[in-house]
Image 1 (cartoon, rainbow, N blue to C red):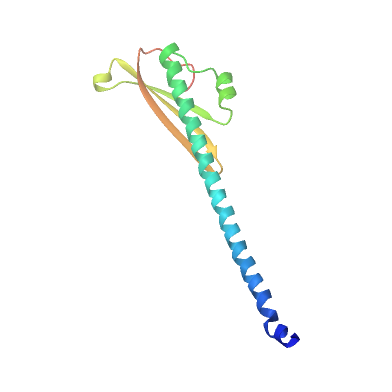
Image 2: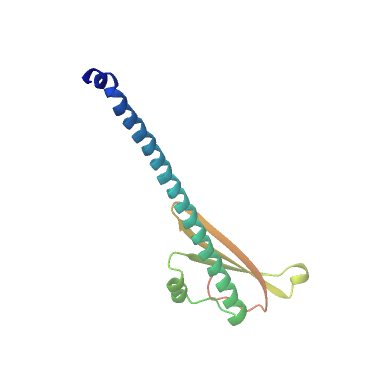
Length: 130
């Protein structure tokens, strides 16, 4: 009986080592894929926040003629920045003003920029941007 155990004794240990190695490779692959999904989701969240901030600025300018005050903007979107540019309309839009809002944010090491534009009536100056 002891001769039989010596003959197959190393096979069981080798089988365990191979199984644990395969399991470790699978766990590393899972961890890397989860990190990739986390980066992608963070980028999408930052992008959505930039879209909502730019849309809110355009709505505020359209309704009140003024952008959102800086303290309110920083309270709502603390990690974002905004730039507002105003120019005269061209062509059939000459009687209107083109307002371009660019919202920027950072997701990990990637810069997120969203630019939205809208024609509005009137030529009153803006408080920030231009």
